[in-house]
Every structure is written in structure tokens, then in C-alpha cells.
Length: 310
Image (tube, rainbow, N blue to C red; front, top):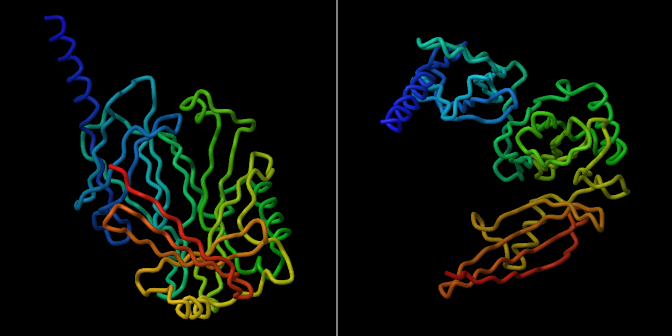
């Protein structure tokens, strides 16, 4: 009987804190904001639940391990909308309507089909939800000033004109350590800031890389952009490099992957063409053809062989 009573109390507890519903609506169109990623986080920025709004814009507020000593928030961070973070009042059982307002600074970038476009590196911090600035203006002035100075010093004025801030992640070590108790962090804040270099004339839509800084603007990890040199601003276009790969019977349209990467030893960017092949006998082959992106010189052809083991 005691176990039955405890089980009944648990069910009641879950039901008590799982009835609130939010309907997200687009402020401009007044239509349901469907397919929006929404989170529930606690005071320590730890993820408690997540989900996608349905076709009617509904998101159901549920926390499986509810702790009444904690505060909970519904949180939306989608680039085309202004960020939303609101404390959840669990006493409200009726549907809450929230209007999502358009982000006036959002400008979707479209690139020609044949240009290289890279996503920013993105770090998963377990259940901890990092803050994600959308512009350098959202950073402390000291940090934005130091990172601009660092970039200008590293790449030079000409290269600098073609780079821009794309996205970032910020860790606050105080709530982070409450989630990862053994984390060794010497300053409170850590910044992971992604910048993009663009050069459409040379077939580069966005080449991206992160620079990492601590609370005081000290560089923890350098950005993978070439240091200023006599050749760093000279590029052989992707179209020209493709012709070289075709001549070697290496490039296959719609099959060969094309990448741009930083060679730290030689301080150059390199064009990479990658072909992958799966053999019937479980053998996996990856071939990589590399060219200097600044002068078009052939650098290397690597073939990596692996075997699938069941």
C-alpha cells in the first residue's frame, strides 16, 4: 500500500507541472510559429526539456524531474526572431500566447551554387545551454575591442575587410560548474566566436573558423585564418582549382566534396578535394587531393584505407 501511495503522489506531481501550454505566434503574420525549437532551462542554464512547436505553434511545458526550489524558463533563440527567455509560472494552466517578433538585424545570406559555404564550428556542452551572441555588440566592449584588434593584427587590413562575425557561444563558469562539478575553469566567462571570410570572385562564399578567448580577452585558441603575409590575400579561384582536379581525373561532379582548410605549418589555406568509396568487401577508401589556395600548386594526394568490422 505504501508503494502504491508513493507512486500515486509521483503521478500527481508530474501532472501538476505538465499542463501549461504555450502557443507561439509570428508577430507580423499573426500565424502560428510552427517548427520552432524551444527549450526549457533552469537557473543554471541547464536544459530540462526541448521540443519543436507543432503545426499550430504549440509547445507543451513539461519537466520530468521537477524541483520546486528551482526557477524554470522557456527559451527560444532562433536567428530570425528576437530572443525570448521568460520565467514559467506553473500556476497558469491556460494556454499562454507568446508573439515572436522579427529580428530587425537578420539578413539571410544566399550564395551562388558553385561557391564554398562552411558552417561555423558548434560545441555541445552537454545539458548546459550556452549564450549565443548574434553580433559583436552583444559582447562586453573590452572583448569586442580585443577580438577586433587581434583579427586585424593577425590577417592585415585587406583580409580583414572581407571577414565578419557570424555567430558565437559564451560559457558562464558559475552555472556551468554547477552542472559539470569537476570542470577546471580559471576565469568566469569563455567566448567561442566564429568569423567568416568571403571572396565570391574566388568562389568562397563563407570560410569559417572560431577564435576562443577568456574573460579578459586572452586568446586561448587562434583563429584558422592565415597570418598576414605577401601571399595571404592572393587566391586561385575554386573554378580554376577544379579544372586541375578534373585534369587528374579526380573531381566528380555531385560526388567529390570540396573543402577549404588552414595549414598551420605553412600558414596557407588549401583547397581539398575528397572522394570516398565503399567496397563490397568492407573496405573503405578516402582519397584527398590538396592544392595551395594562394598559388594553385599541387601539394599532396593521400589515400586512407579502412575496414568495416562487424
